[in-house]
Image 1 (cartoon, rainbow, N blue to C red):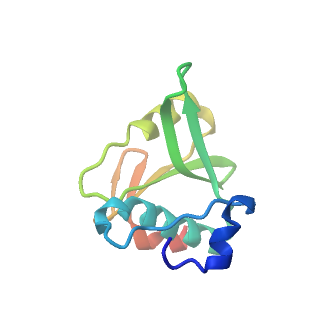
Image 2 (image 1 turned 30 degrees about the vertical axis):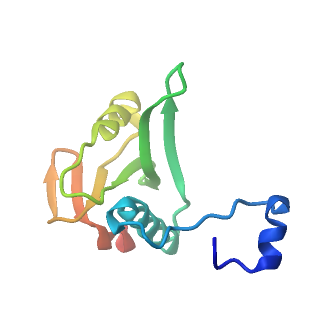
Length: 132
């Protein structure tokens, strides 16, 4: 926050939003997931999709299922997970399909890898979010 003009920092508490920044000493991998999700979000918006997501909590308030993006194709809900690491889990994708099976179409994982298909899950490189 060192670079915020003094006038702005004096009135920071009165802003209708929270000021945030990435620490200049932070390692890139700490924010990689956030950047990938942001890129996918922008690509989906430019393709005419709304930024929709799904989160489900248990009784203790802990997240038990989270889907990064939801779009609609052919009257079906299409869940999309954006992954930034080489190894990842897609437990929420499976849980979402199980819970809403009749309403869910193909499922997508956008990641840093090759195009492949495993049953109803299609894996695409992140840059292909622009053509979804």
